[in-house]
Image 1 (cartoon, rainbow over the protein chains, first blue to last red):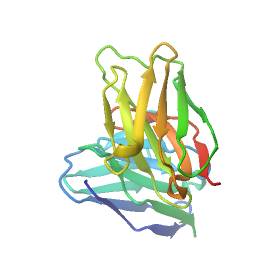
Image 2 (image 1 turned 90 degrees about the vertical axis):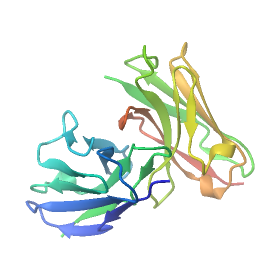
Image 3 (image 1 turned 120 degrees about the vertical axis):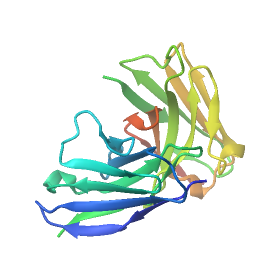
Image 4 (image 1 turned 30 degrees about the vertical axis):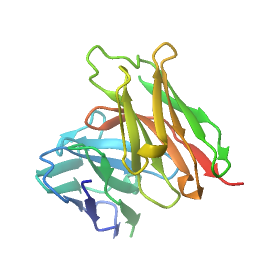
Length: 107
Length: 119
């Protein structure tokens, strides 16, 4: 199985801050990397697919980069509605696996 | 707009079988070329997300090896729905279960349903 490791596991930030979350795969996954936002009691929401493609309807303050084993999700200017847990997920090979999550909290 | 809705028993006794159904509306579960599949994903309380498996409309399946011996996913194209059965459940199977459309990513999700394993 491909292991996905996210860092940090949690962070505190203020509205307007630039936030960066990293995800590392245990082997190369090319660009088969997706990012989701998860709020309590809600289904995960796809933000970024194929490492850097913005899902339709997702604000442009979200961006993704990386390939191979190292990936980054960046929120350019954190908004109140962005406080949530973020997960990366690889779709390179089965079983499909998720990172452990990064909880973004209000500072 | 594609919508998915999970249904099924919210309480299952240990050693019994968990059964859930995902109804798809606003679109067909079928595609001409199996371009997407239909997944089950779960999240135990306070933990992360775990992919359980998926099925194509053709009936082809792939399961997470960690659950493979206990999982069956099936599809009913006429009812536009797909289902999950998980046998011999334990407390470790307590989770919110989601269904999702799957391409190389999960783009449409159900709202999730909590299944508690308890006697």
